[in-house]
Length: 280
Image (cartoon, rainbow, N blue to C red; front, side, top):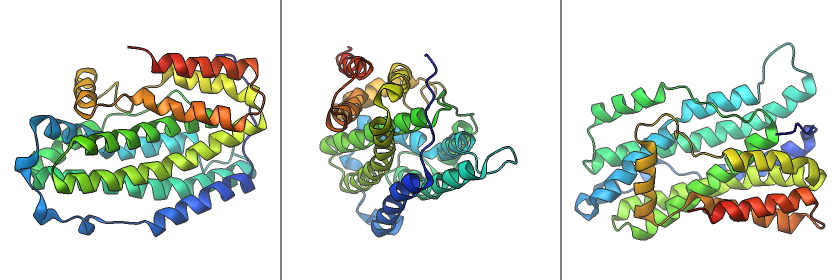
């Protein structure tokens, strides 16, 4: 990819983006106690449902890896960092803390659900999660816009998957949990989409190569580390009637809505999103 310099977002821009999202999270907060665990009906789960629950538990539980990547990408300590950059990164950090609390709650709820539904035992599950969790996680997106674009697409893909899976599941507690997690993911998506939008408004031609790079290299989390990920993810997607490239339409809509006169670079970006969505 040709390097295109992009200025950092300002402290005011980031603060104004982060504060309402963090507040909405606090206003919509839920806990494991809000789920009626006594109403779990394991007999309402198919083998495919159980497989999906196991899969998404691994994905949600890898939170330390995701958080470490974010802190490497947006460091908040170091004498070599300028004070204005650290100030901006600390605003991101406020969201990362709120985001990580949501994701940890998802992982904890899915873990408890596996135990309540008899999908796995407590000790065996925690050891399996620890085995996967110790694996290093990294992404090739050091540029902030690329990091935001990746997480925007990933959060939207996860939100859509939970809603699609909920449509085919009949077990009541799992349906409740999936809706709660989908709403959280929608809120996370909203912040990242807002940040990407700011870059697009500021300089769409400069932003386009970075967005194309993310689209061409996008992989869902743990695709390189979770055993049998490819086969398992295909089975999971088939169960839910879902395709992660549905998330690309969010970027396509953004480009069309917020850019008055698409440049050649943005035209190519739109073509790329459409082509990726039609791949077999």
